[in-house]
Image (cartoon, one colour):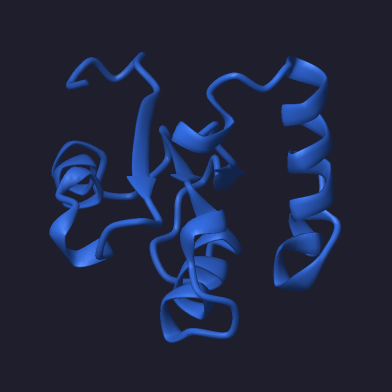
Length: 108
């Protein structure tokens, strides 16, 4: 991560409290201006709709709170209940998630 030629991938889980995830703090120590850090938020579907946590992660994804030049991306992961789902089913669930609610602005 310390190599100036490296891209830092800062992965945070929306399932956990952001303040308990040290990767963004650590990436800022290495890349203070955030010029070579890419943020990734996973598990956005675990957030309660309309909650403060959901609003926080939306603002994070919009690059408003922790600002990275490479921005933030949002990824909906497979979970235990979908472990046997086909790729088509997973893609359909992801499409449905990102085409509704506040996350539709991040539709791929």
